[in-house]
Amino acid sequence: MKSITIKSISIILLILIIDQSVKFWIKTNMHLGEEIKVFGDWFIIHFTENPGMAFGIKFWGGIGKVFLTIFRIVAVIGIGWYLRILIRQKAPTMVVISITFIMAGALGNILDSVFYGLIFDEGTVFDPITQRWIGYWGVANADMSGYASVFKGCVVDMLYFPVLKGNYPSWFPFWANQDFIFFRPVFNIADSAITIGVAYILLFERSFFKHIE
Picture 1 (cartoon, one colour):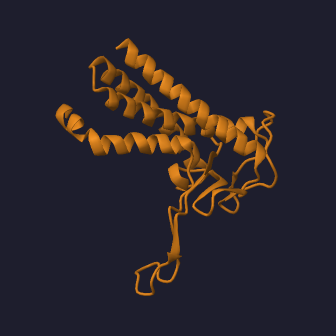
Picture 2 (cartoon, rainbow, N blue to C red):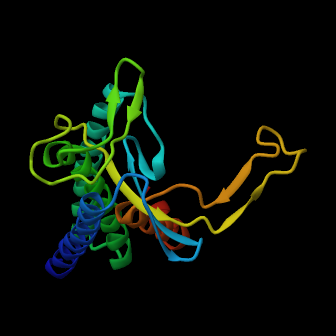
Protein backbone atom coordinates (compact mmCIF):
# COMPACT_ATOMS: atom_id res chain seq x y z
CA MET A 1 0.00 0.00 0.00
CA LYS A 2 2.85 2.35 0.82
CA SER A 3 4.45 1.70 -2.57
CA ILE A 4 1.35 2.56 -4.61
CA THR A 5 0.72 5.63 -2.44
CA ILE A 6 4.22 6.91 -3.17
CA LYS A 7 3.73 6.11 -6.85
CA SER A 8 0.43 8.04 -6.95
CA ILE A 9 1.92 11.08 -5.23
CA SER A 10 4.92 10.99 -7.58
CA ILE A 11 2.66 10.85 -10.65
CA ILE A 12 0.58 13.77 -9.39
CA LEU A 13 3.67 15.88 -8.69
CA LEU A 14 5.24 15.02 -12.06
CA ILE A 15 2.10 15.92 -14.02
CA LEU A 16 1.67 19.15 -12.06
CA ILE A 17 5.30 20.17 -12.59
CA ILE A 18 5.13 19.54 -16.34
CA ASP A 19 1.69 21.14 -16.71
CA GLN A 20 2.54 24.27 -14.73
CA SER A 21 6.00 24.67 -16.29
CA VAL A 22 4.54 24.63 -19.80
CA LYS A 23 1.75 27.02 -18.83
CA PHE A 24 4.15 29.47 -17.18
CA TRP A 25 6.41 29.44 -20.24
CA ILE A 26 3.49 29.97 -22.60
CA LYS A 27 1.99 32.74 -20.47
CA THR A 28 5.28 34.66 -20.09
CA ASN A 29 6.66 34.17 -23.61
CA MET A 30 3.72 34.25 -26.02
CA HIS A 31 1.01 36.74 -26.94
CA LEU A 32 -2.58 35.63 -26.51
CA GLY A 33 -3.56 34.00 -29.81
CA GLU A 34 0.04 33.48 -30.94
CA GLU A 35 0.86 30.21 -32.67
CA ILE A 36 3.96 28.06 -33.11
CA LYS A 37 3.74 25.31 -35.72
CA VAL A 38 5.35 22.16 -34.36
CA PHE A 39 4.33 19.64 -37.01
CA GLY A 40 3.02 21.48 -40.04
CA ASP A 41 -0.66 22.32 -39.75
CA TRP A 42 -1.37 19.17 -37.76
CA PHE A 43 0.17 20.08 -34.40
CA ILE A 44 0.23 23.72 -33.33
CA ILE A 45 1.06 25.45 -30.06
CA HIS A 46 -1.80 27.96 -29.92
CA PHE A 47 -1.95 30.13 -26.81
CA THR A 48 -5.48 30.71 -25.60
CA GLU A 49 -7.08 31.23 -22.20
CA ASN A 50 -10.12 29.31 -21.10
CA PRO A 51 -12.42 30.89 -18.49
CA GLY A 52 -14.60 27.80 -18.39
CA MET A 53 -14.32 24.04 -18.41
CA ALA A 54 -12.01 21.64 -20.24
CA PHE A 55 -11.39 21.94 -23.99
CA GLY A 56 -12.53 25.58 -24.15
CA ILE A 57 -16.11 25.04 -22.96
CA LYS A 58 -17.31 28.25 -21.30
CA PHE A 59 -19.52 28.33 -18.24
CA TRP A 60 -21.85 31.35 -17.71
CA GLY A 61 -20.02 34.55 -16.73
CA GLY A 62 -17.92 35.87 -13.85
CA ILE A 63 -20.14 34.31 -11.18
CA GLY A 64 -20.22 31.04 -13.09
CA LYS A 65 -16.42 31.08 -13.11
CA VAL A 66 -16.30 31.24 -9.29
CA PHE A 67 -18.87 28.45 -8.90
CA LEU A 68 -16.99 26.32 -11.42
CA THR A 69 -13.72 26.73 -9.51
CA ILE A 70 -15.41 25.84 -6.21
CA PHE A 71 -17.00 22.81 -7.88
CA ARG A 72 -13.58 21.71 -9.14
CA ILE A 73 -12.10 21.97 -5.65
CA VAL A 74 -14.93 19.92 -4.15
CA ALA A 75 -14.57 17.36 -6.94
CA VAL A 76 -10.82 17.01 -6.33
CA ILE A 77 -11.42 16.48 -2.61
CA GLY A 78 -13.90 13.74 -3.52
CA ILE A 79 -11.47 12.15 -5.98
CA GLY A 80 -8.70 12.23 -3.37
CA TRP A 81 -10.98 10.55 -0.82
CA TYR A 82 -11.98 7.88 -3.34
CA LEU A 83 -8.37 7.34 -4.37
CA ARG A 84 -7.43 6.72 -0.73
CA ILE A 85 -10.22 4.11 -0.45
CA LEU A 86 -9.00 2.34 -3.61
CA ILE A 87 -5.45 2.19 -2.26
CA ARG A 88 -6.62 0.82 1.11
CA GLN A 89 -8.74 -1.81 -0.65
CA LYS A 90 -5.70 -2.80 -2.76
CA ALA A 91 -7.44 -2.06 -6.04
CA PRO A 92 -5.59 -2.98 -9.26
CA THR A 93 -2.58 -0.76 -9.82
CA MET A 94 -3.82 0.61 -13.14
CA VAL A 95 -7.16 1.56 -11.61
CA VAL A 96 -5.33 3.59 -8.96
CA ILE A 97 -3.06 5.17 -11.56
CA SER A 98 -6.03 6.07 -13.78
CA ILE A 99 -7.77 7.88 -10.90
CA THR A 100 -4.41 9.47 -10.05
CA PHE A 101 -4.18 10.89 -13.60
CA ILE A 102 -7.69 12.32 -13.29
CA MET A 103 -6.90 13.91 -9.94
CA ALA A 104 -3.60 15.37 -11.19
CA GLY A 105 -5.30 16.89 -14.24
CA ALA A 106 -8.05 18.42 -12.15
CA LEU A 107 -5.49 19.87 -9.73
CA GLY A 108 -3.52 21.35 -12.63
CA ASN A 109 -6.49 23.37 -13.88
CA ILE A 110 -7.53 24.34 -10.34
CA LEU A 111 -4.13 25.99 -9.80
CA ASP A 112 -4.77 28.17 -12.86
CA SER A 113 -8.26 29.14 -11.75
CA VAL A 114 -7.35 29.88 -8.14
CA PHE A 115 -3.93 31.53 -8.44
CA TYR A 116 -3.23 32.80 -11.98
CA GLY A 117 -5.40 35.88 -11.48
CA LEU A 118 -3.18 36.79 -8.53
CA ILE A 119 0.20 35.86 -10.02
CA PHE A 120 0.12 37.44 -13.49
CA ASP A 121 -0.37 41.09 -14.45
CA GLU A 122 -2.39 40.29 -17.60
CA GLY A 123 -5.14 37.81 -18.34
CA THR A 124 -8.58 37.28 -19.82
CA VAL A 125 -11.25 38.95 -17.68
CA PHE A 126 -15.04 39.10 -17.72
CA ASP A 127 -16.61 42.46 -18.60
CA PRO A 128 -19.96 42.76 -16.74
CA ILE A 129 -21.12 45.54 -19.08
CA THR A 130 -20.73 43.67 -22.36
CA GLN A 131 -21.15 40.25 -20.67
CA ARG A 132 -18.11 39.02 -22.57
CA TRP A 133 -14.67 37.68 -21.76
CA ILE A 134 -12.02 40.20 -22.84
CA GLY A 135 -8.48 39.22 -23.78
CA TYR A 136 -5.33 41.33 -23.59
CA TRP A 137 -2.37 42.42 -25.69
CA GLY A 138 1.27 41.67 -24.98
CA VAL A 139 3.13 39.12 -22.89
CA ALA A 140 2.12 38.67 -19.27
CA ASN A 141 4.55 38.98 -16.37
CA ALA A 142 4.53 36.82 -13.23
CA ASP A 143 5.08 39.85 -10.97
CA MET A 144 2.29 39.09 -8.47
CA SER A 145 0.44 42.31 -9.40
CA GLY A 146 -2.66 40.33 -10.39
CA TYR A 147 -5.28 40.79 -13.08
CA ALA A 148 -8.23 39.20 -11.24
CA SER A 149 -9.30 38.14 -7.77
CA VAL A 150 -8.86 34.67 -6.32
CA PHE A 151 -10.89 31.94 -8.09
CA LYS A 152 -11.18 34.09 -11.24
CA GLY A 153 -7.99 33.18 -13.05
CA CYS A 154 -8.25 31.65 -16.51
CA VAL A 155 -6.83 28.28 -17.50
CA VAL A 156 -3.98 28.38 -20.01
CA ASP A 157 -4.48 26.12 -23.06
CA MET A 158 -2.01 25.54 -25.86
CA LEU A 159 -2.26 22.12 -27.54
CA TYR A 160 -4.06 22.26 -30.88
CA PHE A 161 -4.42 19.37 -33.33
CA PRO A 162 -6.46 20.49 -36.39
CA VAL A 163 -5.73 17.22 -38.16
CA LEU A 164 -8.66 17.33 -40.57
CA LYS A 165 -10.05 20.46 -42.24
CA GLY A 166 -12.89 20.89 -44.70
CA ASN A 167 -16.49 22.00 -45.10
CA TYR A 168 -19.76 20.38 -44.13
CA PRO A 169 -21.85 19.44 -47.22
CA SER A 170 -24.82 21.63 -48.16
CA TRP A 171 -27.29 18.93 -47.06
CA PHE A 172 -25.79 18.63 -43.57
CA PRO A 173 -28.24 19.83 -40.86
CA PHE A 174 -27.37 22.91 -38.75
CA TRP A 175 -23.79 23.35 -40.07
CA ALA A 176 -24.36 23.21 -43.84
CA ASN A 177 -21.39 24.65 -45.79
CA GLN A 178 -19.63 25.72 -42.58
CA ASP A 179 -15.96 25.04 -41.85
CA PHE A 180 -15.11 21.67 -40.33
CA ILE A 181 -12.03 21.12 -38.17
CA PHE A 182 -11.10 17.96 -36.26
CA PHE A 183 -9.86 18.27 -33.55
CA ARG A 184 -11.01 21.90 -32.95
CA PRO A 185 -10.68 22.38 -29.14
CA VAL A 186 -7.41 23.72 -27.71
CA PHE A 187 -6.40 21.97 -24.48
CA ASN A 188 -3.49 21.51 -22.07
CA ILE A 189 -1.50 18.77 -20.35
CA ALA A 190 -3.88 18.69 -17.36
CA ASP A 191 -6.81 18.08 -19.74
CA SER A 192 -4.78 15.32 -21.38
CA ALA A 193 -4.16 13.63 -18.03
CA ILE A 194 -7.88 13.64 -17.27
CA THR A 195 -8.69 12.25 -20.71
CA ILE A 196 -6.08 9.47 -20.43
CA GLY A 197 -7.37 8.45 -17.00
CA VAL A 198 -11.01 8.38 -18.07
CA ALA A 199 -10.26 6.64 -21.38
CA TYR A 200 -8.29 3.87 -19.68
CA ILE A 201 -11.09 3.23 -17.20
CA LEU A 202 -13.72 3.11 -19.96
CA LEU A 203 -11.66 0.83 -22.18
CA PHE A 204 -10.03 -1.55 -19.71
CA GLU A 205 -11.40 -1.19 -16.20
CA ARG A 206 -15.20 -1.05 -16.57
CA SER A 207 -15.50 -4.57 -15.16
CA PHE A 208 -13.75 -3.51 -11.95
CA PHE A 209 -16.14 -0.63 -11.30
CA LYS A 210 -19.16 -2.78 -12.18
CA HIS A 211 -17.94 -5.32 -9.65
CA ILE A 212 -17.77 -2.79 -6.77
CA GLU A 213 -21.19 -1.21 -7.44
